Each structure stands twice: as C-alpha cells, then as structure tokens.
Length: 313
Image (cartoon, rainbow, N blue to C red; front, side):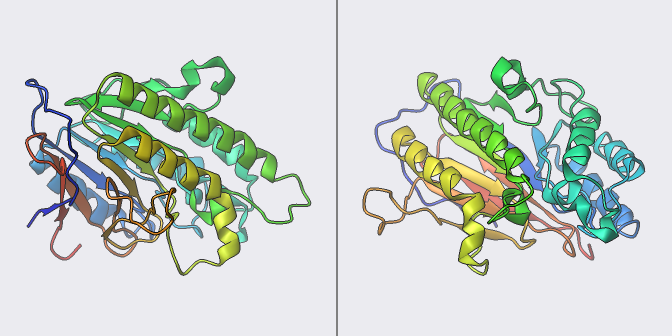
C-alpha cells in the first residue's frame, strides 16, 4: 500500500501539463561482496519490470570493510548499466571516506574520491540503457570539482543529488592533520548548490523539490558531536524549505532501515514540525530492497511512497 505524505500546500494551483509518474530510490547495496551481487541483480530485474521514469542510488556501493579497488568500482558500474531506465548515483562514505580503514585497503580517502569522480562521473548523463541528461554543479567554474552534484527536472518537479556522506560527512572534531579542508570546501559547494536548486525551483514554480544524499543526518543514536558535520546543512534545509513553501522530500541511505518521517522543526519556533519537509530513508545492507515514489500533482501531498520488496532478498 502506498503511503501519502501528509502535507497540503495552499495557494499553488497545478499546471495543466503536470503528470503522474514514479521513480525508485535505493542504496547501501551491494554491500557484502561478492555474495550480494546476485541479490542486487534480482532487485535490478524487479525495478526494470516496474519501468519507473528513473531510479536513484543514494550511495554505499560496498561495505566500509570491503577493499576500495577500481575492480570493485568497475563491477558496480557494469551493474548500473543494466538498468533499463535512467539511474542517477550520489557517492557514499564507503566509496571514499572510509577507504583509509585497514580492511578497506589503507587508501588515501581523497585519492579514492578523485577516482570515484573520474570513473562514475565522466560526463553529464545518468547511467542505464536509457540516459537522462543532468545539469552538474561542475558547470559553475568555482565548483568545477563537484561533478557528482547533479540536478534535473521531471514533471515540473526539481530533483538534485547533494554529496553528503556518513562518517560525520568526513568532518573530524579537533582535527590536527588538516583533513577538514576537504569537508569545508565541499560544504561550501553543497550550500551553494542547495541555494541554486531552490532558487531555480522557486523561479520556475516547481511543484516540489526532491533531494538525494547518502548521509542520515537525523539519527538520534549518534553522539551529539557527530552533528558537527551536518549542522549548517540542516539549518540551510530548514531555511530553504520554509521559503519554498511547497513539498520537499529528502531521500537518504546510510542507516539501512526504511523510515518515513518529518525530522525538521520550523526554525522560527523550534517546536513545530516543518510540515512540508519529509525524509525518506531507504533500506539497504542486509535488506536488498528499494522504495517506489509516486509523484501525483493532483494530490495535495504530491508524493506517496511504497516499498518495493523482492521476496527472499
């Protein structure tokens, strides 16, 4: 059964050209390698049968203790190209941030990030047999390195990937080795990117905004210090969502369990839930499943969500 998102936006009539369509979100897979490749392929087959307009993988194409080799990257790239419809991807921490771990190969994380960018983002198109043209933040000279931040429009809804990862977004409290330089540079890019995405959505009267990122920024089990890597981003999301005034859906992975909630508070009161912001967390790791999201402009909530379950997966 599909779950509608409970928010009605007042005063924004539906354009006559708006249409209903579906997309699929997935992430944190294939995780245990090579055992999970077969399960991942079964899920891809099920998604292909659904024929969504596009799919988005929200990162972590392996576990944090799997070797960060180019051979592994190439294998997943091959899997990505078996999607019949377009597939968009945003990186997770296991692809680069956690590659300095001994079990992951003791790589330099920033060197692995450079490899991921080169291999997974050679141009401004999606993966899949059918391609989706993307607009990259890298087209802005000041942010030329950020090829992974992409946006597109479908059915008068704005979609965008934002490169935010687990492991505290690569932020190290009391950093003594200069590692946070990468964090601060990427945070500057991400904040500018969010501003640009919402500015375009407002100027073009988009029906809603959908953001995709790997990091679970709302996990209450994390130590309070871990919030440092996301504090400014969460504040920006609150501010931009209030100003936009229409439905905003954030899709993330990272914590491996299906969650649909409203974790943001109105920045004016810090008490009331921000009703036009919804977070969807996709399942992953042990549960090689996905989520189908329906966009229906005739419905006040705009989005509804249904788990896409492959039995035994």
